[in-house]
Length: 413
Image (spheres, rainbow, N blue to C red):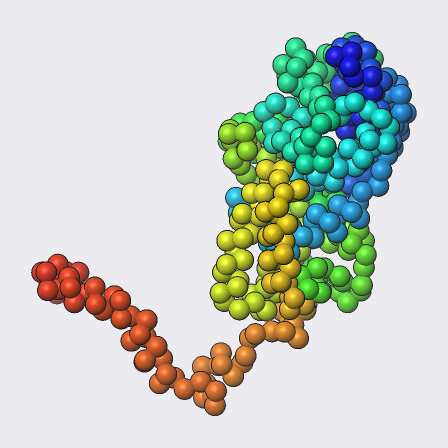
């Protein structure tokens, strides 16, 4: 332990990292530099965080604004890939860890630190996301994970430790949720949510209105994309942060984006998480719809396979890997013509697509019409079906010859 004179801690000001600062000093006798990543935690969330870190024993607190980097280098690629973990989770926490860990490692090098530390538990996914990023950037850097080393066994014990050391913490034993917030989403775990049968308390939610209390009239919004990247809302070009903030406000007001899932953690256990992703839900829905319009069938179907694998990579913390880079190359090719507008109706928790248009649309009214047309001769389908059905026809002939017909006896009445 004496080999570590200086450590850079990924610091949030929450319960875990608040008690880690004095614990590191007590057990390693080292200088602790607190690093705070601003990934859009919300209004007032970072107020006074530098003072709090210093009062907890940090020698320095470095705050870095990573919001635009987070969106453009991590969120937008994941959006373009269409990656959703287990069909529900929009990967808000998963995407935020690589940029945080990367900047943390950069600070560690600049400050001459011998170690980096995080406050992730030994049961969760975030420990993997942080540490795989560390290893991808500097495998020689020492990693300290107090949750795997100390004698504290529960959040209640953490609270007791914090109170004993005079450290104010933003939770109580009565309202003991673990929350993580950024521009893309907010997640809730722990407390009463550890029982999958329990409905979340309404006062737990920090972002959105419940669908029951959402406005009785819908709102319409148009999202515009250029090559798969969102660029405008209702015809107004916006920078990434402003765009997502506007959609978050709209979606939250109308109860859009709540998700309750029992997911499969990377470490092997199931966990129950509740998420609010209002703007992200709007963007994912709109982007997918534009792909329906602009991608050919084979590309779209294969991209769906890629999207599932991409989601696993992000969830598992494998951002800085050759496979993710290779998949991005495929995704980028598919997005060349994913340009256009999608119109959505937001109403009481629902995000409903009602219109889509693109200069690269593959939808041809003359082909799709049920009326007379000059492009498609319906007689062509006879030969197509005969060829497509040839294998099953040959199989049926063999079954019938063997007396294994699939036709069952039929009696009227």
